Length: 151
Image (cartoon, rainbow, N blue to C red):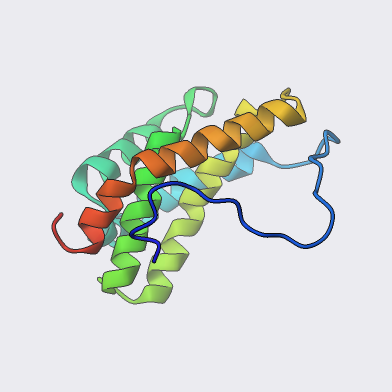
């Protein structure tokens, strides 16, 4: 069903809408970055079996950057998650290993999200999340190609 859907649709919900809080959270961004960098290095053989060479190379370039210059772009994140989804679907390696290998990469994206939204209003955060969602929609054809084995 998801393959035929062209655009996002509202999801029915029950109960009150939620509001984003602008209360500060204490998150160790430095630790998130370190876990990303270490994960990319230590999981290279696993990542090579999951990711395309261009995606892995871009992750390795990002991991080599100092913390203050590091960014995990929406485009790279979407390619990463789509390649992971396809690898999971095809069971290219043990599915538990695939899921575990995504964790340090997620931490890198979380680091970037926190950095980019540090001083953002709830409305700006919502807009940034919507931009990420649109990136997922734009790149869906690449997921369909990978899913069906054409890529």
